[in-house]
Length: 579
Image (cartoon, rainbow, N blue to C red; front, top):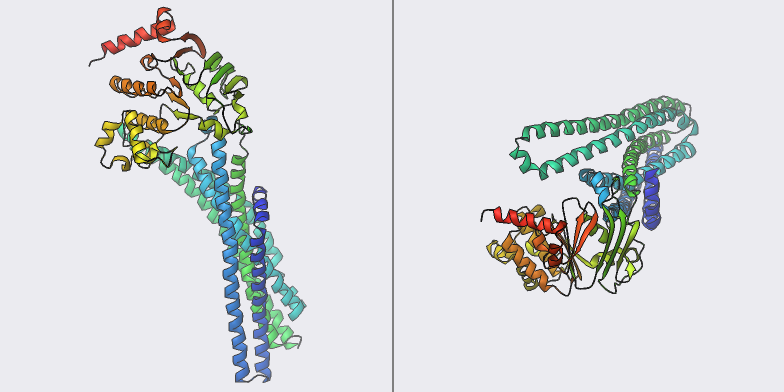
C-alpha cells in the first residue's frame, strides 16, 4: 500500500509519541471497561441490600474519579497523536516543495499547476488525517473491541456473548464491500478536484484576456461543467460512505435483540445475575464506538490510500538533474562551453549544435539570433535546468556537474525575459536574493536599473505592493525591477535573457551604460536587439542552433554576413519608426 509506505518511516521516527498515545488509549480503554463492571456490582449490592447510602456515595466518587482520569488521558493522547500527525503534514509539504525545486522545466511543461496545487493541499491533508484520526480510529477501536469482548466472554457470560456476536461477521463483510468502492470513488474525486483547481487558476490568471474577447460566458459554462463533475464524484464518495452507518445499526440492532432474548433466558435460568445482565448490556452499548470506529477508520484509510498513490506518483517523478556534485566553491567565473548537441526531451531536432565558446572573467558576451535559434537554451544549460549529455560545460576549472546545485546557481544573477515578481512590496522583490540589504542599497540598484523616475511616482516608494506577478507594473518596469534584483545580487555572473526587450531606446542606452560599468562581473547578454550587444567583448550569432558567426560588432559588420544583415534590417526599422 502506498499509504503504508508513506507512514512507516514517519511512525518509526515518531514512535515515542505514538507509543505514549497508544498507552494512554489503553489506559482509557481499561478504565472504560471498569465502569460497566462497577455499575453492575453496585446494582447487585443494592438488589441484595449489601450497600448503604455512604457506600453508595463512595461508589459514586469512584465513578467520578475514573471519569476525570479518562478525561486527562484522552487530552494526553489527543495532544500526542494529532501533534505528530500535523508534523507529518509539514514533512510531506516540505518534501513536496523540495521535489518541485529539483524537477526540470520539462516536467512543468507537461503538468498542470492546478493539479500540483491540489496534490500539495487536499492529498496531503487526506494522508495527514489517516496518520491522525486513522490511527486513532484503528487503535482505539481495536483496543475497545478486544477489551469489551474479553469482559463479555471471560468475566460475564461466554454463551451470551457468542449469541450476541453472531451478526458481526456479516457487518465485517459489509464493511469490506463498502471500503473497496470508497477508495476508487475518492480517487476520482481527487482527480476532478485537480481539474477544477487547474481551471480556476487559469481563469483567474487570464481574466482580463477573457473579458477582452467576450469569453466570460463560455468560461462560466466550462467552469460549471467541471464543478458539476467534481460535485458528482464527491457525491458518489459521500453516497458510498453513508452505507457504513446502516451496516453498523443493523448489526448492533440484531445484537441487542439477541442479547435481550438470550440474556433474559440466562437470567431467569440463574446463569447470570441482574447486575451481570446490566453490565453485559452496557458493554454491548460500548461496542457502538468500535463498530463506528472500524467504519470510520476504513473510510479514512481508503481516502488516505487514494491520496498517497497520487503523492507517491509525484515523488517518483524522475529527476533529470542530479545534485550529486561535491564542490562548494567556484575558483573562477570563467566559462568554457563545448556543446556537441542538445535536444529537448520529446523533441526530435537539436536546439543547439556544435557550439564552442570561451568566456573569460569580466568579459561581456552577446548572444544574438532569430527566435528559436537557441539563445535561451544556452542560458538554461548554464543554469543546469536540463542535463547536457553531448558536450561539456565548465565553470572555473570543473564541469558544472561537479558543483553542488546551490553553489552553482549562486554564481548567477539571472534575469529572464518574462521575470517573475511576487505579490510583495517593491523593495522585497528587489532584495529577494539579499534579504538583509538596506533601503539605500535597494534604491541604488533601482537607480542603476533606470527605475529611479518610476520609483518617485509610486505612492509608497519601496513599500508599494506591486500585486501578484507584478500586475501593477508595465512589462518594461517588471524587467527593470528584475534587473535591479540582479544588480543587487553579489553573484559574479550576470545572465540576461532578452532583458531589454520591453524598454525604449533611451532607457536601453541607460541600462547599457550601467552594464558597461559592471566590468568586474562576467556578463552574458541574450538579445534580439543587436544594439544591446554592440559594445560586447564578443558576439555570438546563432542560427537554427548553430554559431554561424563570432567576433566583435565592428568586425562582424565588415564581414557582410548574417550579423550585418540583421543589423541593417533593424536600423531600417528604427529609422521607419515614428518618433
